[in-house]
Length: 481
Image (cartoon, rainbow, N blue to C red; front, side, top):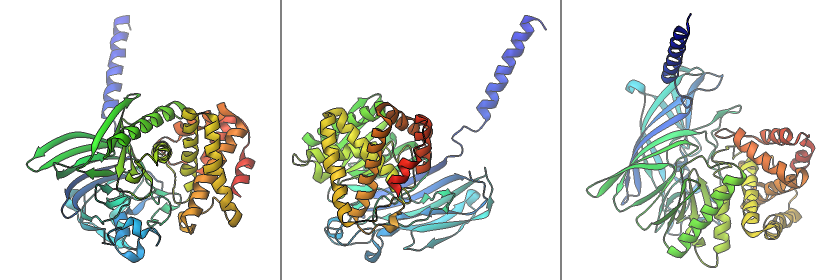
């Protein structure tokens, strides 16, 4: 074979390989996808929607059914609300009204009718029986229609005088893992949400005067009379949330090529929120690893609980946007922004191992304070806010095990002291044990290794041991038990 023939053969091989790669499924094909077409009625505070879900069985076990969480049904009756009695006046300042989701038609591909049922408690779980067992690698398409009624609730899901909060509002596939289907209810304490990475395309029709803050990016926006239609896309995220308001003002700036946005009502503190969010994105990018999305939004909301994280978006209580609460505003924005890394990109089971994302997020907030205010200030904040509060709690409580699930907690003080404060103390003491450079490398390695995956406590320990070259099992054992 002469040189010309070899060159032609080489070119032919390259072309063939290129064609094969082009027609092969992309490496995102196993990710669940949601296509949602939703119409929001502001007068009724209700959503009518259709949804198509493409789900791939990535497990070794054939599946006979697929389960969805219907979180809005936790707001259906006053007896089963996910709030303590003390919280009710703050959650429902104008009195209780029901919120819920009603499932209409459910079909498979080719409009094949599906058999489905709602499971207790409160109809919070939708079981869809499959027409045949779904083997590993096989894909099923599930179509459904539903109506969502929002309650007058100043929580993750509901509305107040200024904003509509759409957190956990649509049917989302439960996680299937070594424990089987994770069909936990909407617990009172913590963040009772556990989900896999998915791709979303949401078509939203709303009154044209409403401004939308959302997970993902708004790709299209067109007016039709008194309405407008938005097309929003979000790839490789754990959830899809929105906040709606006709009162929003928006400020934005670019940090490391990321569009950081602040949605607010009061300009002075809206701009401060933007600064805090930008500073947090910049620091965590440098210390942990790059934020992988193009947009991040901090949203002032009718929300009584301080702050709440969702992918690309965090809800922050409007009550924090004051001069008296400026430090709290910065601290909570830094905390919720850290959740974009710990929960958003690196997932974990927040029901069984709530300490993992909350402890790591809380200590990342201390690292933020250290970066912008110095080591002495960070040490003082740690001593007062974390260690001090935990030591007070410890005087009257002996059961401080990380083995608790969200179902085991009896009060918010117990949850925050164990998941947040004790969790942060683990990382503070780990940093002392292994040193600054190795600690930073642990966080970066943990982030890169478990990006878009579900991580466990054991995964974290393995990363620490691999980075440091030592056995830290005894250290973690001491903290755990």
